[in-house]
Length: 178
Image (tube, rainbow, N blue to C red):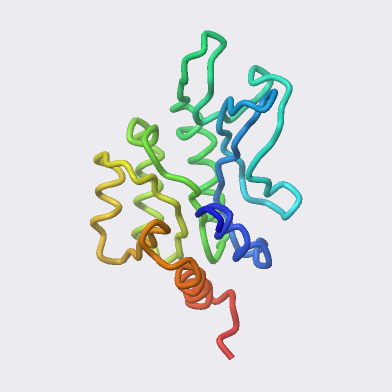
């Protein structure tokens, strides 16, 4: 069994040249989870869902991180600058799919980022995303869309979820249907 991000990674890796967007990398220091970093999807080598680091203070583009005082903090600026730039670039470059792995709590406080997400969802481009299970106005608006398929790995059979992702990739023109 694997999680949402791992499932998506396995299925889209062969098509990375046609996929834009970002994923959130889990950062570990001395075996402890210390942060989450936004990474632009570029190639197989950089598509690592986890990374071990020496110090969180050396990292950029952090989404959420454990501060020196031991408190989890978030960076709205990462969404407003890095996230917006990644999503706009993916759109301009004509990527067939834009990955947003993942959307959650912090984004509701990033108005420009939310605007770009909604623009992409309203556009003809295919969007593949991971939504946190929690409820907030931003995520609830996304879930209310009638042009959205939500695959919940807690309630779906895993192989059924894989097949749905493959159908999506086929509809986006990445997998040959024959």
